[in-house]
Image 1 (cartoon, rainbow, N blue to C red):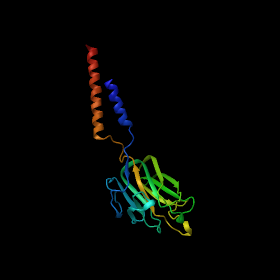
Image 2: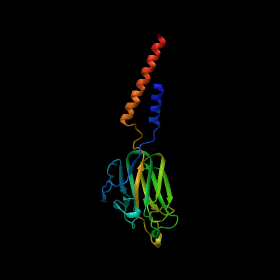
Image 3: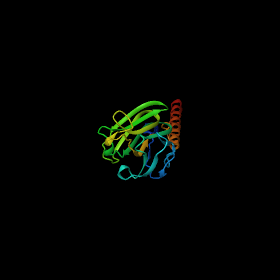
Length: 214
């Protein structure tokens, strides 16, 4: 019975889902941010802008969720980029500021995943254009180590052209959740449990062999 229990515990560890982290920007830093900054407690994810400037963390009201990350401005087609310290296989984020005055029906939130310079996947969600953070975009699949997120027109241009002008929306994102970076590795306590379990299994088998031989 002990052998079965240990094997079940080991199976549960190896079948457990990948550890996930969520960046909600509530712990800072706040205000304008340098390229390559990380949220407090999440040094394995760094944020950049496509144009090399315009990152800001603040409370944007209903366009965000508490403190959120924005990529200014709406005049230059700027958008968000992120890089991980290793590979991961899942990413999800909430987004807002899809202003109906500066979008057209059919405009998109576009999440693009890369492994190095190689394209892994592109995911799109049609903007509901209500100017509120109440939509989510996500990906789960092949490994990737960097991504971009932009509001685009149906053809993928970051200039949405809403309101009769050639404009690029300010992306506001929050609650960025991603899987384990660098692969799923059991925590030290889990490793100890596995090693102890294999020891018990080995000891029980040796004892059984001794009894049979006797």
